[in-house]
Image 1 (cartoon, rainbow over the protein chains, first blue to last red):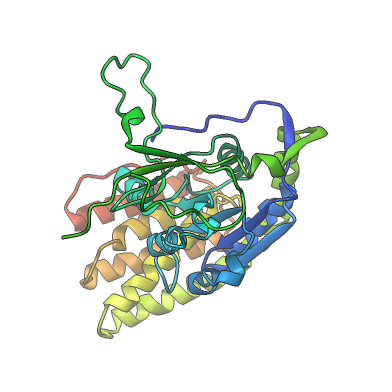
Image 2 (image 1 turned 30 degrees about the vertical axis):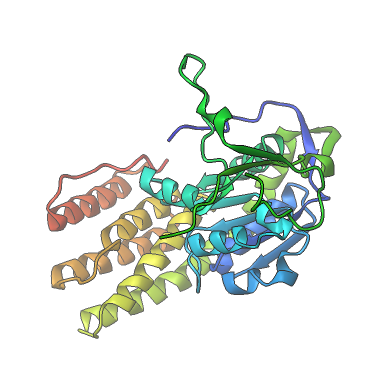
Length: 193
Length: 171
């Protein structure tokens, strides 16, 4: 798999204490390990759930900045979980970065996650370094969202080939909307065409 | 047929970047190092909790061996349990646990039915994991550990009819 993140060079760490994390993993041991990692990285606001259905309640998702979820969830699958988060339009939570962890790292597995609308994929076993790198990547490289008839989520195309000389179809997406507000519901895009 | 909807690209302000700043005098390496120490403390209980999880897997394997039907729910529990153990082993300093649990997870993945020999092999994986945990064998640097893994890989490949696919080193 291509490492899209690279390694974090020696530099000042981010102060992440203002960010609110929502963590979903149905294994209590893994959940505890992940909470320990996030606390170690300086994250103060952590909501952890072993039940994906509970995590999806509006009051649980309110104000969350980043979601981290495992691939194997119950009672919902993680794909259903991510799709339900993305389906929260027009609530701003639909844009939340989702980092999905999985020990299943075959290309088909990663593509399944990507198509469900995840933001970053984190192959297991996880380490504090890998987790920190993914969080930093989500902060430093926010991706535009695509809203189409069969997908809502981060733009799935992230590779840029400098040698490509053909038509830049990425710039031919019919409509681009710049959202300036950070709060409040997403505007109605139905009549943007 | 679904209604046509034009594709829209949405650019939002970087909300997260506005909530974070760089920590003066603390490097990312130092933060990660500190976190690793905290995880190590948490992982001190790994042997105890994974032993409990393995006993649960053993119970499901025993039900399969006893002919309890349907098999699918038991196989599913073994799959999920072995995946969880696989994901925790290396984090907790036991890459050999990750390696053997990964073999078990792969072996039962997508299996709808297991015959007697396959159930024996599932039990052999679980017993091997228990031996590793009880003996606190962290990696495959010893000849015995390497042999345990190789034997399981060969047995799995033989039953599944494929060539042995060596896994990455558990070191």
